[in-house]
Image (cartoon, rainbow, N blue to C red; front, side):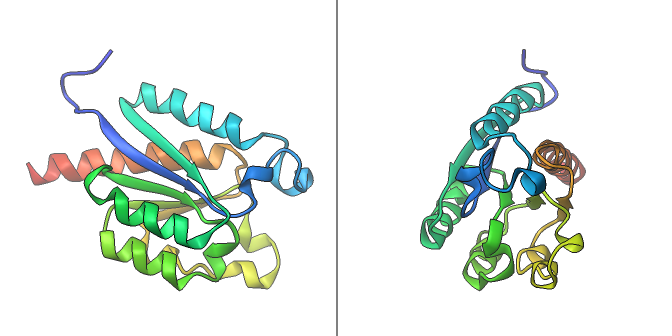
Length: 158
């Protein structure tokens, strides 16, 4: 049931390359939860937060860039796990900077405990925050933080 205090928000969740393989891909690192299960959890928590969650997964950088561009008039924020593109994609970084929507970067594993090349994120400098290392819970924590940030910013500007 909607709370009269808040309008429903719309959040775009972007999943980058290989995340469609969750549940099968290196479960010791990424866990056994599938992407479909993560999306269901996000939708459930979105309802509790009075937030519509729209999810998209792509292995193609341009599809993700296009989705970011298209988000401008549809969504109030972006939750992104860019996967390997985190460490390589200036294009995703530039798209996020261009739309200037509040963005939270999430990762299933703690990228700072992994290979050195995973320690750099092109996305972090244009995000309001980053959550990593909590498995599927990283997405849920990211969604909650993003929604709280948007609502606080909206209330502060009123």
